Length: 323
Image (cartoon, rainbow, N blue to C red; front, side, top):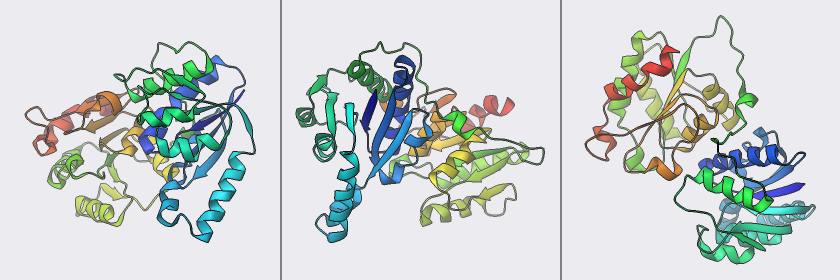
């Protein structure tokens, strides 16, 4: 069986789809997947052993100059690649009008997706041949696992889902490697940021643990923050700009990770790494870290991360650092 997955973004949503592939791979011998995904996340699907072909799409970039000659040529090439295969079935796990109309509708094969009452945008369900009722009050990973099970007619496993990508990043350590932790300090929304002063306090608490602290970054302002956090501390390393795969390698080798609510936190979860995620106003129940060794850390007196102390976070690190 050959299946096309339509799950284009965001990073967390793409990662949350991986356990559903593992379920299907275990339930249907020989099943293979192709995957349509936004170009910025195109490295992720190929980490899973059941994925053959990744079809990058650039809807976010294309819509800025939809009718330009270059974009029209890119769209034509994408649709040619999309329609080259006649799929046994197509699973639209995005549930949005945009992806359903621009991608799912144009692919060749029986189209499955969530029904009117289940999809994130109900009108998207009109583009599917088969529509499935999926309970909303469950984690996003479980919703996708249920959609795949109903689309491919197998029983959804009761055990926790398996991303099946940790082995892709199995890290070979040597005697000269220094043990380290990774602090994921960057996120997009202001109310998801932990104050710089708190990060600096946590970093200083790490001084006598014998562990190096590594700080990745993606944008220039994040690099500048990392440099401020590391200033004057020899055991703190500001990493160079890294590809997503290289960031995954860094996370895979870490003893532990502390993160704010960001896509890379979901990557840490997918790699089964001990990860303490700091949540303020956002609810981790439906879209938070899913997987082994995941710890939610929230302030006890408010929903502001300003009220989450560095000492409270450091105490939570004791267990993973002791292993």
